[in-house]
Every structure is written in C-alpha cells, then in structure tokens.
Image (cartoon, rainbow, N blue to C red; front, top):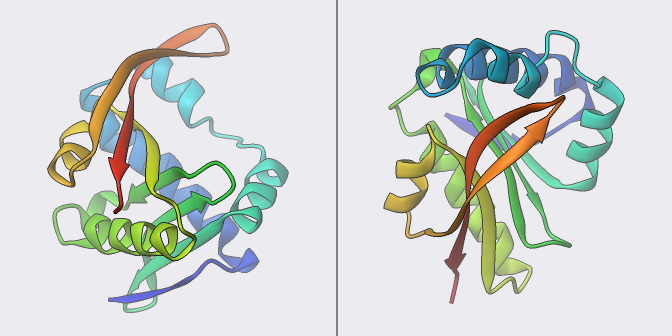
Length: 155
C-alpha cells in the first residue's frame, strides 16, 4: 500500500471513489434521498479541488489504484474526510489514512482533533479513541442527515 500527498490530477478519481463509497457502504445507514444530497452525481469539482489543495490531503493506493483518501483542515483542527473504496473495506486502508491524519495534526501542535463521523463511521472513530460530543442533524438541500461531532485528544 502506498500513501502519498494528494495531487490535483487525483481529483476525478477521488470524486468517483467518494460517490461510489457513499452510495455503496453508507447505504445501509442512510436513505437514497440522503445519499443523493451527500454525494450527488455531479459534485462541485471546483469546491472539492479548492478544499483538497487547502487541506493536508492524502491518498492511499493499492497497485496504483486509489484505495482511499483523507484530509485535515489544520486551521480548524478538523479531520474533514476519510473515505475508503468499497472494494478495499476492512483491509487497513482507513487505519493507515487516519494514522497519517493524526500524525499530521500532532506535528501541527493540534491537541484536540475534531471529526464529524457518519453513522457508518461512528464505531471506527470510537475504536480510535474519539468521543462523541453530540449527535447532529445536518441539513443538505432540505434533507437531514445524522452524524456525530467527535473529538480526540492527541497529547
């Protein structure tokens, strides 16, 4: 497994993985309407490109194929995204990426790292030592999605 910094040429593949992961893996915990507003077929590519470049973003590759990605918003001490390909679930990709994000945060002197975890990802983050601060209802295009605001001390 190769782990490297995100590159702008990764964008199309990252967006494809995001869409497919949400619509496959998260489908057990969210309705089709919720999935559609979370990961629309036509994402705002400019917004994604700007965000991924502004953050500390990483991709995991298995034999040159994108297996997952994650990013850290250093300014807000926020673990923004962590997505693993449906084909690569339960193979350590999420752990590899989460370890890297937490290492980056520690190197940036971040003492407490925030994440907003989906229902699907809640147990993953709990096993990593994150604690739930609150359950949230996030509105997207008039549709509510449940997630969990969580925090982990990195000291």
